[in-house]
Length: 261
Image 1 (tube, rainbow, N blue to C red):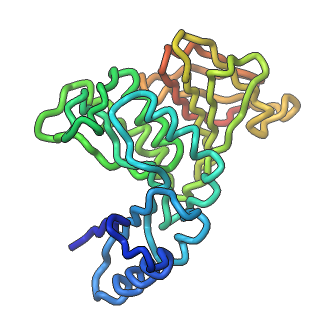
Image 2 (tube, rainbow, N blue to C red; image 1 turned 180 degrees about the vertical axis):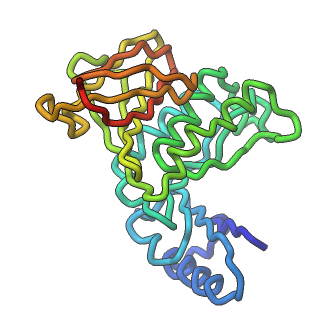
């Protein structure tokens, strides 16, 4: 066995959750082999505050995801205040990916109507930027070409798997619509990942001011932008950058500091 998902289903009512998970963590650490310990505690009992003491490698921070846009959106927005608790070897698990299910989950609760490819791309982009484990939930024997393109995106996987696992932080340009949700993640090689997410129902311009990233105007530096979804170089930008983001869509850029001149 290489992976144990220790679920909270049918837990004895009298038993303290923390004791159960610490006991399992101790047993696995002394099993004689490396086993990934996945704590599926659904985000209850403020699990993010104490789960690292159990030795769990990942912990569920939400109730079950369903294959619909509102579920993806609500889970992502609910986790910003918990990002600081995720760290190397103890990752905030926002539940498995529904990319590629297209409303064909194992039951009516999970299926929930399905999503568009644009929404699945945003789902994958959010999970990658927010350091959630990327666990495929669809049938890998029957993947559409679009699903393969989303799930096999090496540029987004590299952001998710960055060795330092730094938490993302949120920035908000004053000109942005309230539907724009922008995340920034500093990477171990000094690059910066910027994720622009449109939670609204119409295409919207999203802007980022570079001083909010820690790059003031007088630093004499610009950012060279690479589009991680389209896999193209955007060029060098100074002081700020904006892009149109489709409804329920996302734009992810990997940025490298370069001289302004």
